[in-house]
Length: 371
Image 1 (cartoon, rainbow, N blue to C red):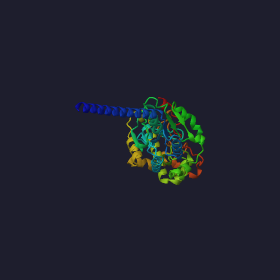
Image 2 (cartoon, rainbow, N blue to C red; image 1 turned 90 degrees about the horizontal axis):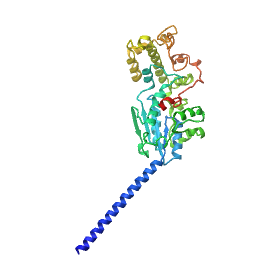
Image 3 (cartoon, rainbow, N blue to C red; image 1 turned 135 degrees about the horizontal axis):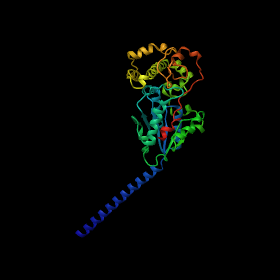
Image 4 (spheres, rainbow, N blue to C red; image 1 turned 180 degrees about the horizontal axis):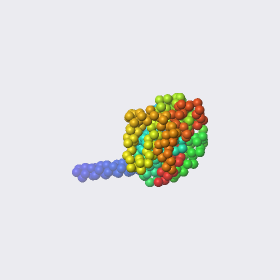
């Protein structure tokens, strides 16, 4: 009797061990299968600017690769229109795609004060330093910027790990460049090599508004105001006369703000170009007031005096600061070539309405990407 019971117990324990072994084997096989799936899964990273074209690209990628790892990637200049943020978060919700938010923590005007240089229609380091550089450092080297936020990450199918072996080969980067911006294609692809870079809208002509209507999303308000893009609240430093004339007509409050910032920055830069300050022999007594004003909008006594004297400060008879050749500077710096916004406001009819200009982000950034 005891012998039979002992045999039954032994068989029972063997059966339990068999089940445990089978269960563990099943778990291991599932884990291996998941690992194989993750290895075969491509990363599709969409540079999500807040424009309609980048939304259309996200839509196309999701349709084409529903089982792959798709990420919306937004780099913030902190100088955007409030409606842009409404748009990108609503887009992430409706597309059911995760969004990664990165920011250096500076605005373009703060950066100009730090660098003592007024960006303009020829040189726009704001897009380089605030958008391209953090993106390049993260995707090339895995370095995260000062600010990182993740939204809807429950839709992410696998971790985005730039330092992981094979990341570049397994990742495709997407830009919302259309056929009308084909001149930007080669430079962007060269800059982001060895990543596979794709721009679906060059080959596919799609009405962006039709795509938005599929998801019931209202387009960003800057398009309704007549702007060609949804960047920097319509105050792009690389924009032309026609662009800023439109800003004056459609959003005078923002125009006045950017006009005053241009006046203050121009005067500050000329101030720092005095030989004693440039050489460091004399302390910079203006930076604190300027930076605080650009950060908060609060005007100190010094800032108020600069703005009150704007016409005098712009006079060609006034020599203040020295240029790189040591010659006295006799005119203010400006975003638009040859015309300050103060002058544009006073002579709006004489401006060139066909001079639109605008930012060409991610084009001329080869050095940082390959450092």
